[in-house]
Image 1 (cartoon, one colour):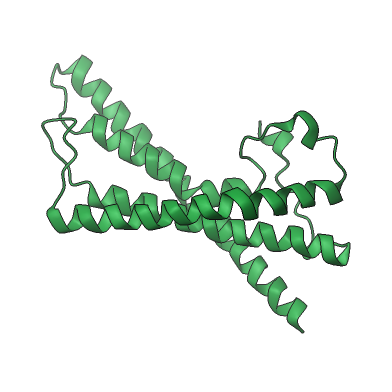
Image 2 (tube, rainbow, N blue to C red):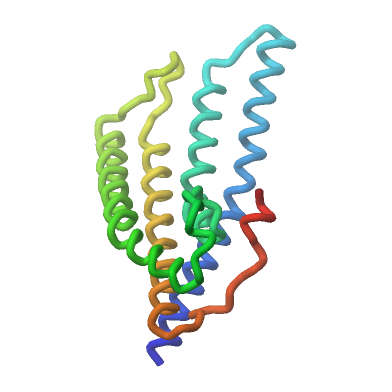
Length: 186
């Protein structure tokens, strides 16, 4: 009974990460549009914009941060694989559980707390990005980063549960999704 509940929760988190990854990919089209618009405005019409550079930075940052959880789910984050790739599945799970508990959870919690703290502060004081004369508000981008940290943390919980379950029960909690193999994505 409890296993089915855990399985449903982990599957739901995985589906949420998949959905986020598939939704955010459309921001790439927005990024391409903004950059093409700037290139055409600057070099064809000799009328550069004051907003395109910051907008492209914010869109690119949103793409990256909102997909951290999805990237974790598909095993796409960079690791020092010198020894890890030679480990058995059991030892990989031990390493993942230990390092997640010791380092990743605390770091993510600090990032979530700090991210939302600065996002609310930016909203409260109407903070602006001062890198250009456009001065866009920074709060929306700060909230997107904080949401990205939160989604990453939620997916980390799912991966932690999968690894812990494997260590205890000697079998996978959910069917291993071979749709996305890291080697094929590179």
